[in-house]
Image 1 (cartoon, rainbow, N blue to C red):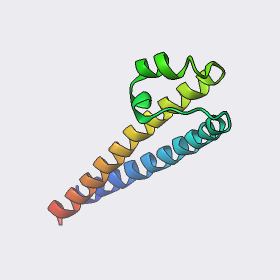
Image 2 (image 1 turned 90 degrees about the vertical axis):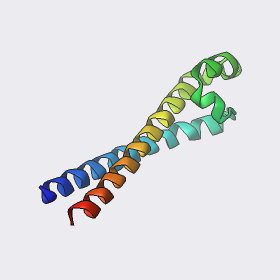
Image 3 (image 1 turned 120 degrees about the vertical axis):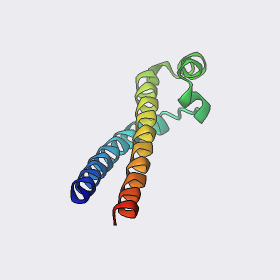
Length: 99
């Protein structure tokens, strides 16, 4: 049971880590485009899509798709980072309680 749990958690951790790196690369590509176009917005806009649509998108209509892609990838990347932290915690708990 111990070996199965360790193998499962390590496998999930590695999968989530590679998925997180993949999305971070995608975020950086879109971020470069937004920086080149001098698009500016804050974190409040990123986590509130309604505010983003009302305030930022009208300022930069040509970059609307890139802005939406960037914010959705950032939110997804943050969710995956949360899952990674949970997996690390589970890994620590399994090591602590089953040894």
